[in-house]
Each structure stands twice: as structure tokens, then as C-alpha cells.
Image (cartoon, rainbow, N blue to C red; front, side, top):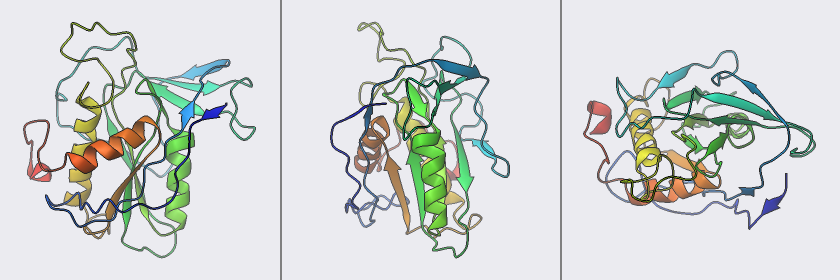
Length: 233
């Protein structure tokens, strides 16, 4: 799979504590990677994390600004024409029910946590290459990883007359940012349960997920949806 554009992997200081409406927290930089998708793919039903990790819904009942999708959630594994480091990778599409999966650190727990936003051009999520593999690396460093499977219904050619597309970056579409705001709030709210220091919560994203990092780092004071519970306060 060819790459285009720069890759930024150094730590940047955005100074935003997502648990509070004031600036004071170091957040790991977003990583921008642009992919050319292609090759033969095999399909399976909705994505599930590996054994020992529970996938949790982030919304109670209906999700805000819910939109119909073209079909059920689908998981695809690339063929030999689309390999990264000689291996296939897994994408998830038609996501309408966002979830988060918590990966606890192996060995010493530093108390830090990172919410990971995979990329995929707001059409799909590269769930392993830019998600589970990142969590494996973070947890090996003593960092709790929370993998967000945010909404990407995958409607590329939407009607311009619509209020906003079914998927896309904020402010064109609010849905992915709503999911990110809700997830960071839940991580803060459940910090003690998950052995996380609420002052050491950051976000990291790739490609479209990198845009989501920038969006949540500059739109944290006000939710894009009506508060549901204590996690939204």
C-alpha cells in the first residue's frame, strides 16, 4: 500500500486536559498517513477485539445525529495487492454503532492513557494497522489504550443539499467528533476504575483520525450533543 504525505511521529504539546475545560495537558501528536486503498479483500461480519478485551458501546440508546447506512458493519481484510510491510491489514466500514475497547497496560502502569482514533478517509477505519497494533505498543510502555471505533458510514458521494454528509471531518459532519467527545468523557469518568490518572489522558490519531485529534483538542469546552449523564459534565 503506497504512502503519500509526511508522517509526524514526534510528541507535540497541545496543552489540553480533555477532562477539564482548560488548557493544561500534553497530548501526543496526531499521525497523518494517507493510504491508497485497493486489492482483493475478504469480508467478515462486525469487528470484534481479540480475546480478553471487551468492546463497550459509548452511547445509551440512540446515537446523536443518527443517519441510515448502506448496510451492516463490515470487516474486510486486504489481498496481496494491498499490503503493508508485507502483510494484509483490516478495515471496518459502515460503522453506525460506535464503541470503545480498553487495552490495559502490560507490566508497570504509568497511569497515562491514550484514546486512539484510526484513520481511513472518513470512509472506513484501518482498525488493526492504526488501532490494535498501536494499542499493543502503548500498553507495552505501561500506557492504557482506548481504541475508539467511531462512526464512518462510508457515504463518499453525498448530496451537497443535505445538512451534512453521512461521514466526514468536522465541521462538515459532527458525528465522529461527537463520538470522540463522548469517549474522552467516559475515560475521564471511569479513570479510577481503569487505574488511569485523569490528568494524563491524551489522544492520538492517524490520517482522518489525526484531523479528529485536532478537532477535539480545539472543541472540548462544549459538547456537540445534549449531555446524557455525568460523563458529559
